[in-house]
Length: 454
Image 1: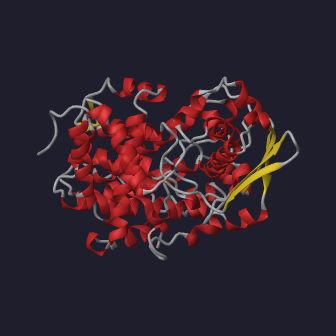
Image 2 (image 1 turned 135 degrees about the vertical axis):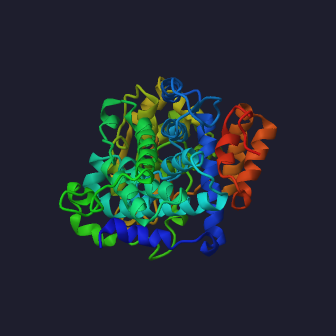
Image 3 (image 1 turned 90 degrees about the vertical axis):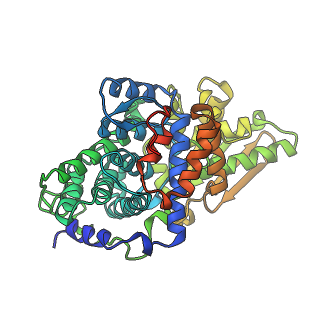
């Protein structure tokens, strides 16, 4: 039996009634987190560019924070870019991927295509996260992580399967959807070196291609079901054929429960270092010191953090994305401003941030590396002008809590769609399993109230 058919057999056996309560609640938190970032990203250049392009088309699918109605693939494309725009999307460390920014845009877009319920969407989301995460755990070995964008590789197969399953496709069609998703998996990690915007669009391509994969399969198009594990399949193409057997959906729980939510709008690998720097900024103040008293900074972290493209970069910083990827910048800006916030990344020309980043070095830590990926620890050590040091070591990132996520969702949604609409949307997500028309999620998230299904 092909790997694709084994996967589909596993996911089709999952029923909403069997899902643990914490899994259902996690889907809701992930959805709120996705939408909060989408609303905050509406005015960013890559968001405006994507909206401008798809606005030329006509359809029925909704875009978060917009009155434009477009074809499903276009809606998924834009919503993915919006959710990824702040670099504060959810994170599955084992696959080095951001799964919500592919899964939710895909399912929200396809919810306009057929009468599906909130339960259908929740179940499909759980399966989408599971399959993408399992494929990613097996495929994204260090060499592949450096070369390819993990989310662009892992997102399309899982999201395509989720979309086909939500639409009620039979086993054969769902296998084809997954296999088509494997065929369109893509994304290169050249952007950290060139300073390009590629990264923001990777997830848009992934979501759009997942939608198209599901639609093609539903329409009767067939795809080689050995597209994952065959002689010329995805695993062999990425030099990981011997790891095919590691893909076992739901064999040891639910992958979505391994997803964490970023506190900082920056690269996953900079999260813990930024939190350590935040604590150190308080230590400096207690001593009556400032960043001008710092002569050098050492950041001890995992091998994975040092190796990931863009993370070990001390400047110069010409684009926001370079700053958000750089552990040096994240630490420097947090030390200077004394907080973790989006405003940290709007100061690329700040001379003190540039000085602090330039005197920062990353060092591998064997203990932290051994604990990865189940934990992502970091230690920040400051050397002061008098020769003394200050240090903070965190064994793991402290994720944003569900309460944090709900608060930032409301803060982001209310200025865009209004207080009442934001409250209604939050309530719908809280009660999503009781919603008979899943398309109301996408419609309520849109700016225009005219097309909301009642």
